[in-house]
Length: 98
Image (cartoon, rainbow, N blue to C red):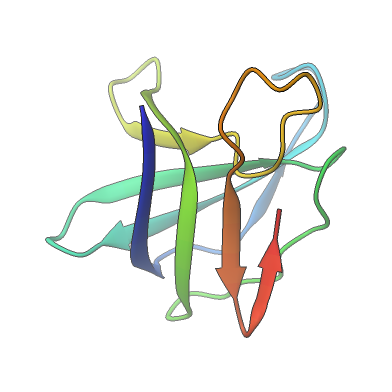
């Protein structure tokens, strides 16, 4: 399901090794309006690193799924070169990463 929401970054960004996913990814935690904690994941093959810091405000668009532990996760926060997923984005500090 495609979602778009505003949130506050609650943890520093971290790089996920390619071994965990098919390509290098950036991930960071946010708290969405209403108090829901969500992990945001971006494929670094399609979008540059987003240098967010805890306390920063972001707007996120992407596909909502649940991680292995049940945590909400938003991925496809960029375009899909194959056109199978609605394009996502991360808006931060006046710039759109997509």
